[in-house]
Amino acid sequence: MDAEDLEITPTAGPRCAGVRDLIAELLERHSVVSRVAPVGTLRGDTGLRAEIGGLDFDIWIEPS
Image (cartoon, rainbow, N blue to C red):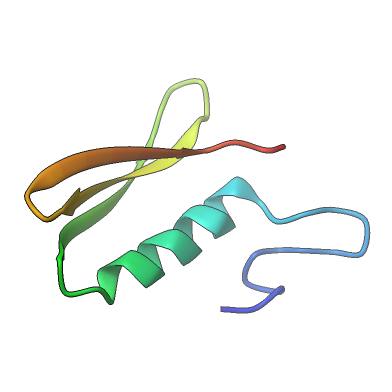
């Protein structure tokens, strides 16, 4: 994954969905992570749900 995948331009930072996809890709490679799925809300929030070591996590990505 590179700047183009994250849709980074000289005037704008990465899109939240691009960052979510990068985090999901990294988590999926780890042996203790058993499940990763993207999630969103009607408000347009971007996040992912992961099961790590038997614990469930919701991770939300927000612009700074």
